[in-house]
Image 1 (cartoon, rainbow, N blue to C red):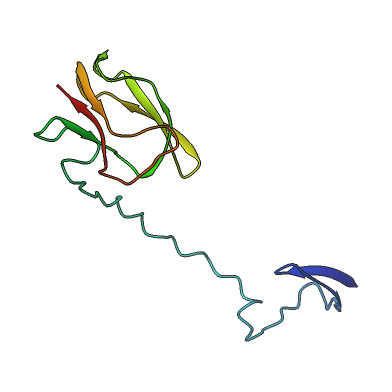
Image 2: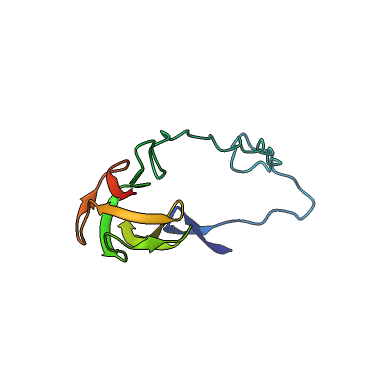
Length: 130
């Protein structure tokens, strides 16, 4: 009897001889022995990484800093604008994903430190509130 077997993407055509149905072939090959799979241990919980307080948050001097590195795609506010808590202030691209940067609190914008198409680092100053 011919069998077609694929191992790691390579196709083998092999001839096998069927012995008596009741006979059992003993072999030392680990491939010929059926072994029950060993259950894997449960995954470890994800490690929590603490970011500096100034990253993506207000620092004591009322400066809002970039939560992630990326490129500023759009600035949706201007100096002097009043913003509400969680109002989108700008859009960033990081790792080919767009991220909305929202106001961490309600207030008036005193200064904007970035423009569209600027590359920013994590923790870089974005906006200053009055």
